[in-house]
Each structure stands twice: as C-alpha cells, then as structure tokens.
Image (cartoon, rainbow, N blue to C red; front, top):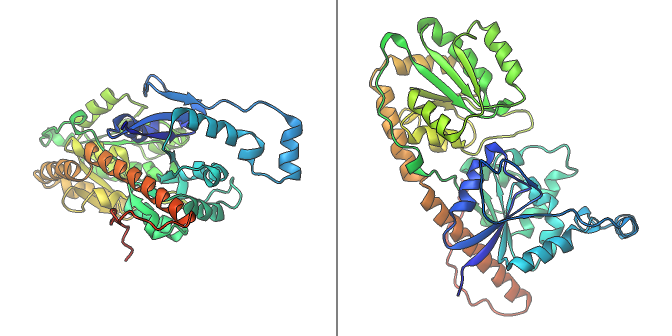
Amino acid sequence: MGKRVVASYCTTFLKPEMLHIYRQVRSLHEYETFVMTKALQNGELFPFRDIEIIPKPPSNPLRHCWLKWVKQKPPIVYRGEYKMLSNLLERRGADLMHIYFGHTGVHLLPFIERWHKPCVVSFHGADVAQKNDIRDYGPKLRNLFDAVPLVLARSRSLAERLLTLGCPPERLRINRTGVPLHEFPFVRRDAPSEGRWRFMQACRLIPKKGVATSLCAFAIFQKEFPNARLVIAGKGPLQSHLEELAEELGISAKVHFRGFLSQAELLDLYAKSHFFLHPSETPPDQNQEGIPNSILEAMSTGLAVLATKHGGIPEAVEHGRSGLLVEERDFEALATAMKNIVHSPLAFREMGALASESVAANFEQREQIRQLEAHYDEAVALAAAEERVSQQEVPLVEERFPERVQVK
C-alpha cells in the first residue's frame, strides 16, 4: 500500500515570511504531498518539485449571474472553483487537504462542506485577527471549525485565542514550527571588549513586531554603551517610519537596516550578534504571533532572547533561563533587561546555551513533522468514523488519539 497523499493548499506559494510552511511541505515523510496555489512567488527561494497552479475558471457570465443572483450560491460555486478543485484533487488522488491560514479556510468553506474527504486548517497568527475585509469573519470561522475534523494552531496562545473564537476544544491540536537544527549550529560567544555589544532583530517591519520598541530601548542602552550596535533585518511598510524614528532618537549611525537577508546572510548575522530582540506587541485588530521562526533560529545558534510576554513567545523563551521577557511596549523595561544581562558577563553565554538546548528539546523539525503526520492520520480516521455513523454503522475504530488541548 502506497503512502497517503495530502494536498497542501496555500493561496500564495510563497511569501518570504512563510518559510515555516516550506519546511513543512518539503519534510513530510509518511505522506506524499503536492502544493496547490493561485500565485507562485519566490521560486528561487522556495524550490518545490510538485506544484499545481490553480487556473482561473472559464468565464460564463450567464451561468455566473444565475448561480449568484438567482440560486444565491457562494462565490466558490458561482465562480466555478468547486468543480475545478474537486477535479484536481480527484486526479491527484488526495486523501485529505491541509489548508494554510484560517482566512483561506473561510474562503474555501463551501468547498470543505461539500468535498467527500477531510480537510485540516492551520492558524498562524494574523488569521486570528479581526478581518474587516471579510464579511462575518467570526461566524464564518465558527462554521469552519464545525466543518473540519481538526484545527491546528502553531502555539498554545493561538489555541487559546481559537477557543475564544468558538473552536471546539476536542478538535484543536498544537502543531509547532520545526527547526532544522543542522542548519543553525550552536556558536560560542564571548563578551566583547569596550562594550561593543551587537543586538539584532529579524522580522517583517510591521506593527506587531515591535521594532519601534527595540529602537527606543536601544537608544537608552547605547547611552551607557556607545559602542553598541543594532541590526534590523527585514522589509515592510514601516521601514521609512522606523528610519525616521532612529534619526529622531539620535541613533541612526548605530542602527543598520539590512533589508531582507538570504538564509546564509541571516546565519552569518546570528553568529556575529550577542543578543536577539523581538518585543512583539498586540495591535488593535488582535493580530498576534504564534512563535516567530526567527526567535527559534536565533536560539538554536545560542543567542539569548530579549522579548515580550506576547503570544507564543513565552512558550519558547523561558524568562531568566533562555532569555528575558518584559511587558508589551515597555521600552524602558526592555532597556533595563539589556543592561542587566550585559552587566553579568557569563549570563548571556549561559542563557544562549540553554536557549539552544530548549529548541533542540522542543522544536526539532523531525519530531514536529512526525506529530503533524499523526494529526493527518487522526483527521482521516475521524472523517472515516463520521462517515460510518452517517451510514448508520457502529464505529469499530478505538480511540487512538488521546491528546487534546487542555483548557484551564
């Protein structure tokens, strides 16, 4: 008997910040997969051998209007997507579909409700935010939760948020990001001479990443350590604003905006840095982090993390052991943490070693892929059991998947 087939659906494959998805789809072991996408991007960064570009359905204005206005069918039906997707999945012999991001699941909900095989949907952070551009996003999410056998969350904090949005706890599972440890080897660091401490942050330049908090904290820190430097790696809509802020704070000569870096360049930056900053914060729309990939990568190389008690960060960074955590937006507390750790010359090395050990113990990629494939097995088994019940048959499969999200 051959391997089961999972269709990995991602509307865009792939944006630079979606490296964790690439790592998942290319690392499956017990399942075969192919990618379904509407838009192919950054193929040189994310080469993958088996991609199905979803074509636009043929135009039929009369049928379109009839289904939309007379029959009141959902967009995925009157646009012709349902038949196209079901034909593609049938042709590829898919046993289930993994839909990346909750808002994509909401769009595909009419398909999910009609397709005769199971889907799982994974949530990553931005998809638990308020979506003013999607009508009735909250109620549609609840319908989505009811339509799939399993819902995957990247962190416990995201799982708790999904519970508040109406996800049944018995359908919720944790699916953490996995880190290929061999790509991020441990680096032993020594305290620099003359206070030449090197801080870094790697992220998209968007509000929830808290880069402004990093700049304000560094402005305080460098008054005592004028030879310190801060490197910001990443791009985003806030770049010009952040550069202006660095100018206003008088630290522009000591802050370097490097833009988007390749993995090799990023690995070099990790090795040359002493600390990793990531003071994430919750914006008004409730967008939040799962567990940022860059934090796990930095920790794997032995960088102590200075961050906030936000989202899934405390699930990776243990305060006082692998880093220091402060409240969101508290740049003065972050600056104090920066000073405290450098005043204890051995602390940053010990924290870095513990950080690397923690990632190896809790986020190793092969183990996370094993758990993901176990979730796939469970989804298939649950769907099969539900089908037997619907056919008035007595379920014969024992409960083999005892793990549940525990809500305190």
